[in-house]
Image 1 (tube, rainbow, N blue to C red):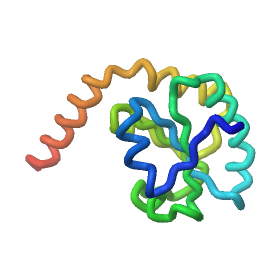
Image 2: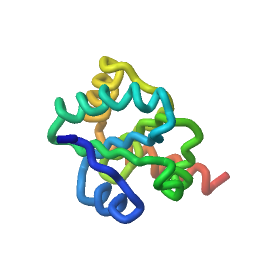
Image 3: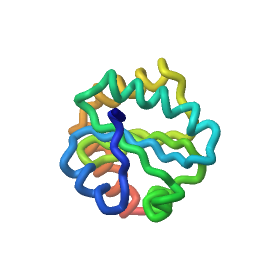
Image 4: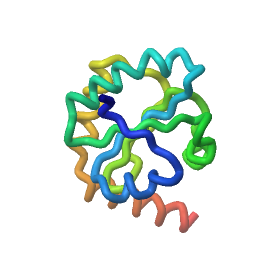
Length: 126
């Protein structure tokens, strides 16, 4: 059984809203690097059962891929408390994925929100 969730435009908002920590793999069946990253992602999902690991098939869900400006796949995105805290194209090796998950777990989300608010205020004043 897969420990990942297929995300669609129908369940995306609910999944991100109802879960504190969601990893998202943007992929497509024709993409070789996506296929090689899939077992690494699946293994990380099994190792972190407290997190939600979602997959978005960019062919089946072009609206979601467009909404996030996905230019290349695979792209990994991490959403914590409804804030995208990480987004990077490319297949990560197992150790790098574990490191990214650890860093995202250790983020002080109050600091992240404060930083976002400061950036928004700054851009509004320019």
